[in-house]
Image (cartoon, rainbow, N blue to C red; front, side, top):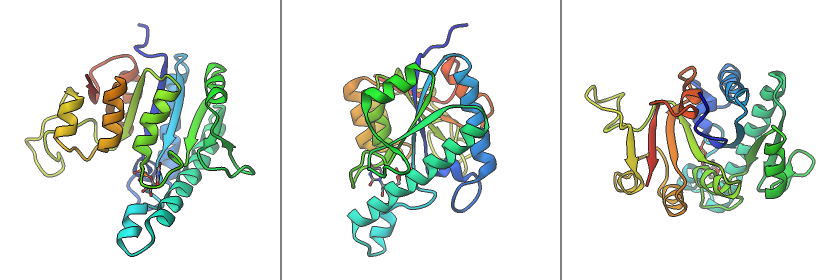
Length: 237
Ligand code: UDP
């Protein structure tokens, strides 16, 4: 069966890399994620990744604790670069070739973000990991995922979370919570869901970029989303 998509933008939150730990990068989880990604690259899918940083540093939280918000946000963006390097390292160990492109320049460590180069890497079958979010404070890596997804002409933005989709209420608290198979952008925005921020959702709505929210911890889920199977929650017009 042919896959539903040719080029995807996968958003991995810091929380996803943390697994059940309270902080930092869980190597076993990163290994698992890389194996899930490898399974879809074997189908010939071009994969770009945007990594979050919340497992190491979250700007808004530190600003709430009295830190200057812009400084805190730059620290958050630096955290995403650490995650990107950990991910790249795990990919290399698993035989996947990747390039890290950063929205902030740290040239000894990562390449700067250059759109055409990123697209060329994807065409060559390399995975591109976008780090440092949008490069601007006051934004999130969800918004970076929407933005980069559009810039590289991805067919879909896949948001990997711990939960296998968007639910009517928190499934950890409410036993009657049900998973939405599909939501429109307007419904997702109106419900003020915690799963993706409104800036990212609005950008995707305006540019008609479909989204799927799924669990990266469920084995094979990423592959099933790509094959167009009923997995996670799709958000589109
Ligand atoms: N951040 C930012 N601009 C961006 C992306 C991220 O300032 O374009 C900062 C912000 O402080 C944020 C932190 O980086 O809290 C980590 O990103 P995010 O919270 O999106 O990571 P995730 O929730 O996906 O782990």
